[in-house]
Every structure is written in C-alpha cells, then in structure tokens.
Image (tube, rainbow, N blue to C red; front, side, top):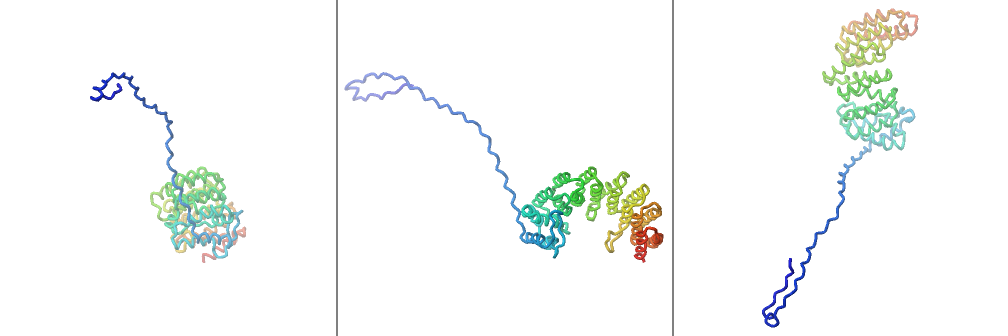
Length: 398
C-alpha cells in the first residue's frame, strides 16, 4: 500500500505550484507475534472427600467404663474382668437399653481405641465386658458403619483369646462388613477362642448368605474346636425362630451332611447333632442315626450320651416344649440303654449315661418307669462314681 500525501490547497497551488513528492516505499505490515508454546498441565485432582465426622462419645458411657476400671478387678494380661462390686460389667448395656440409644457401640469402640491406647486397663475393661442387646432390632440400630469400622480395628488389636469380644462380631456382620471380618479371622491362629466364638455368630447375623463362609471355616479348620464352632453356628442361628424356612433348610441340610460323615470326631458330631436338635423334625432322626452309628463304632462316650439328651429336651427352659417327638425320645432312650449294657464302656461314660437316662426319663413322655428300671441296675456298680450317680438319679425321679 502506498503512503498517501496530503493534497495541495488551491491557494498554495496558485502561489508556488505543487512540487511532485517522491513516493516512499510502502512500510512492511507488522507481522503477528509468534506465540510462545505452553506446556500442557495435568488436570487438577478432584478435591478429597471430607473426612468422616468423629465419634461423639456418650459422656455417661465414658463414666461407666471408668467405673469398670475402678470397681472391678481388671487383668490386662489375662484380658479379663471379674469381681465387680456393683455390676459394673453390665452397667453400659443396662444404661443404654432402656433409653434405646443407637450410638452405644460407637462410644465403646472409640473409648477402647483412644483411651485404651493410653491405658491397657481401659481397653481390657471394654473388650472383656462387651455385651449384646437382648433386643435384636436395637442391636441392629447400634451396628452403624462407624461402629463396625472401629470394631474391625479392635479385632486386629485384641488378644486372639478375647472370646468375650466375639459379642462384637454381629456389629460387623449386620453392617455388611462380613468380608472384612472374615479376612481378619482367617489370620488368627487355629486355637483362637475369639475366632471360634465369632464364627458361631455368622449365620445368626449374616443369614444364609454367610453359609459359604461358615463352610469354608469348617473345611479349613485345623482342629476339632474350629470345626465344631462352624457347624454349631447353625444351632446358634436357629435359636431365633424368625429364620425363614428356606434358609433354615439350607443350614440344616449342611449340618446333616456333617453329622453323617464317619470321618468327623465325636466332638464335632456333638456340635452337629446339637444344631440338628434345633432343626427338629426329620433332622433329629438323622442325628439319632449318626449318634447310634458312632456308639456302635467307638462305644459310649460322654459326648455321645449328651447328644442323645439334647435330641430330647427343652433346653433347660421350664415349661418349654421338648424338641424331639415321643417316638424320637423313645428311640434315643433305646440307643442309650443298649450302650449302657456294654461291659467295656468306660466308667466316666457310664456315669454320664446314667444321668442322661434320668433326663430322658423326665423329658420323654412315658419314659420315667423305663428310666428307673435302667438306672437301678447301676446302684451297686463297682465304680463308686457310677453307683453314686445312679442313686442320685433315682432320687430325682421319685
């Protein structure tokens, strides 16, 4: 583009004339500046979620825990509490239940994790007196995610033999933390009483969905107590009459399979038959068959005698209905009577068998006369303990 020169005015043109101006070369148009390259930046990370709110410890529960430490004998080495002067070991649950508090377990667990980290007596006071609400619905309301989170931390801290703390296992199960609890329990030694007692709670609070976990605990059990705890979880669950029939059938079918296995020990069979006693009906028949086969193979034992008792009783509830039918009680008594005639039966088993004969005579319809006749045969037994038991049982049956 050429540079423009201002035009001559008429006056200037007349006076001097306009001289021709030399054209200047056009100025170069300014070039646009080359932008400086900018390194791309990583996107900003999303903001961290807010931290969960802290637990507000109930001040009254805090004081009640302190009262356990001051009012009871707290042995942190043994992990036990005893000799409480004023029932301090049950004071927390007795305070919270009538008020229907829903943060009881949150407060207890937080106290154990905080104060307990500073003073082992506080930790022991909480763990060794942990209890459950008798009201199942209130137990569920207290099994909050915050309580479960803290309880799981405590499971990793406490002694493997702190079996009283197994009362806290339902909190994790009810809060949907079964897998986390299972992972912790699997790490505990086979002799852990805490592990064994916790496994017993699985079906009661995890329902039939927890049956595969219980079966896995049974299969991996390294000793009788681990296996017995797993199969007894069926009986624990069926203490609640609200278990759905379909769920009950799955649990009881599994216990029936265990009872029928000749490879299990008499200890494990006792737990399996105990569960089948609560399954009732045809499951009691299956248990009777399993116990009868065991006695035939191994002779009478204390546990076999007790199993026959548990298949015809009301679980010690005065006025309660006997779980076995009249025919099932008669069958159990007949099995026992044959076993007691074995001259090679050990004296301890005979003494226990005599006592079970007494109980079947009381529980089974029309069995009292048969029981007296059977027990009378042992009044003069050469073993003093057997003879003494026979005399006491006959006196009780009068």
